[in-house]
Image 1 (cartoon, one colour):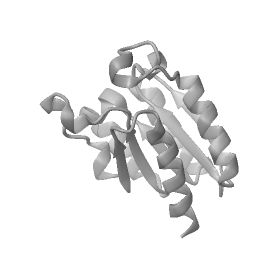
Image 2 (tube, one colour):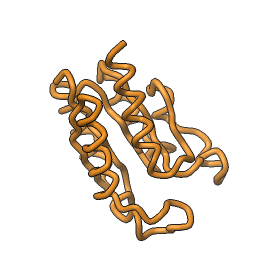
Image 3 (cartoon, one colour):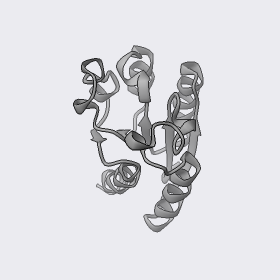
Length: 146
């Protein structure tokens, strides 16, 4: 548990690399997960990654992480702006939570400017493309070593 980081991805991120590449890039979710696993190893961490288009499945993974993980990195995608349930589940998790967005949600439609998850997260990384996941892992390593 001391070094496992759960990386959660919300709806439509299974289409990463295919959907709107001008906005989200051409890197696939499998490539992001592989890059994260490699960096985690360098940082003395391990990762488990999970993506779902279903809110309840993400909630179940957050609940499970309470017993297995030192931290959570989450890209809640569209659930950022709608899910009080994700906020509540993350609030039950005792370790650090970092929120990642591939695009800069503050430069997009007004309804995307608010994230329920941000109120629980120690930090939010947005607008750095898929590199944001690696930035989040580096920050997670710092938080856990403090």
